[in-house]
Length: 353
Image (cartoon, rainbow, N blue to C red; front, side):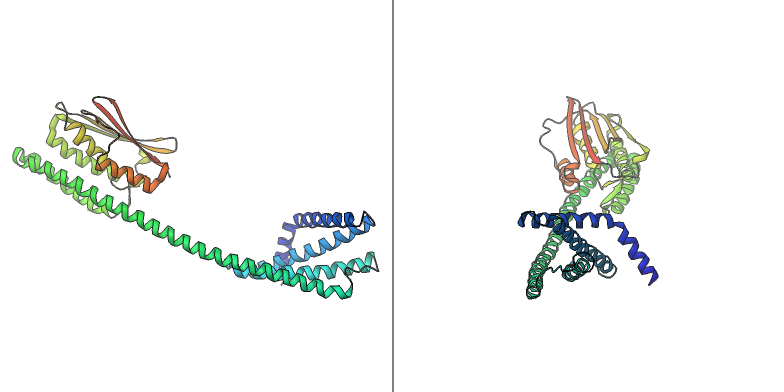
């Protein structure tokens, strides 16, 4: 009991000044209205009565809400509303009686708040108004709960739709990558058996990593770069001196997670549409760094450039769609032709360390 009283007193003191301020403002307003209605007659007496009644009701209501706060479950909104209404009605009735008693005993001995005949009518009217408000609040609470359930169901369906669409895009990207790699291997079997052996080892590693990562929605940047490195090594075997590549990433970003197979289609696009279509071949540079609050992924290739940057192939289109689904407006894809022989594709992803 002692602990309960100490805890009550601690909570009571916390907002006591605010409660007194609010009660006195209400008392001042009520007093002012009564003074205006009575043409300023007995203004001092009216203000004293208004302040006592307002503080009496306010302090009792404040105390009862503190006590109720120890027992009610705030998650059950209807329960909170009903208890609040009961407390408000009871504390208002008790506050009027206590205030009237204080005024009648210590200040104005002949004070009567309302005549005995009207007292019961006043309380009955108060109860009916309170019940009406309670009904409206309960109706509102029921509608609000139904709306929240509908919103939660809608969000669940939206998330399911996004996941399904991402899975469809992902299922197309992985075979696209693997089929191109198999075509490369097929050409090496006849032209360079040793390189074909090396290619098979890289391909087995690609398969292993692909199957491991395929079930993941997000992977680390380093995991994807290891896959890209194996792919480029295979293409390097096939193209020889026509293809050179570098991969550069800030150490702090290696463990950052991004959507799986996000960078690989861009690198593959650079090989197929940039390097392979140029007689002299070219270079591919993958650079990943942090810029402001974004992760900036740059894939630069020399060789042939995009003739129409407004039209995306499937690989880049899938990346663009996945970025919209996952990040919304927070991620961007840029394609720039700096000359007839240099193309840069840039991804900007939010840095969510």
